[in-house]
Image (cartoon, rainbow, N blue to C red; front, side, top):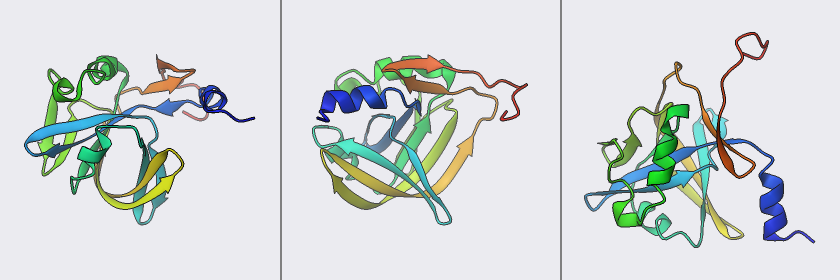
Length: 163
């Protein structure tokens, strides 16, 4: 039988990048960590994220017309700890910038400005299809990843044929 616990344990074997999705709503930055970022299409440029129905941040975030996605670099592990705080204090001390409504963590490995297009109810989640409006990457940074239910830093092997 496939239980939520078995599903979680199996998925822990799949490494994912770590990102923060955020927007300014009613003058405040709201957002949360997200490790469900997926590239969907290059033309047109689309990505997706999924949100748990139990999230209290998700209903507020979905009110914004544009969101910022900040892909975290290896030196930004503290940002994840900070985001565990209560919603009202979550971005206290996090160096963030707002462009329109999209909010970004400064110094991130990559940033993606998106517009929500389509919400798809999928089990205990809402899958959001997002149109990419702007993006940038700092190629000097290494990624922060989530694997085996823990945060890891990895470095590219310059001798590897894959980079």
